[in-house]
Image: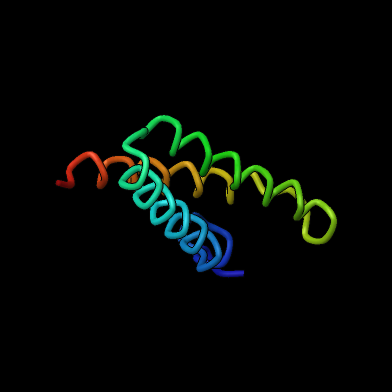
Length: 81
């Protein structure tokens, strides 16, 4: 296996981060409640990993990618209008 296939930059993990960032931005702009938005998106990520236990297993690095995405999304929403 190559490093990009198992590391944080694996395509699946980039998708986790991207979706989490997008959901956080959208929820924050819609509700004006950044902490609640971040917590909700992290809960969705956790539920997704719990669901994955049935097939591919729980992946803590996927969850870490979700956290990075939430942080990026919260930052972007805070810098917005």
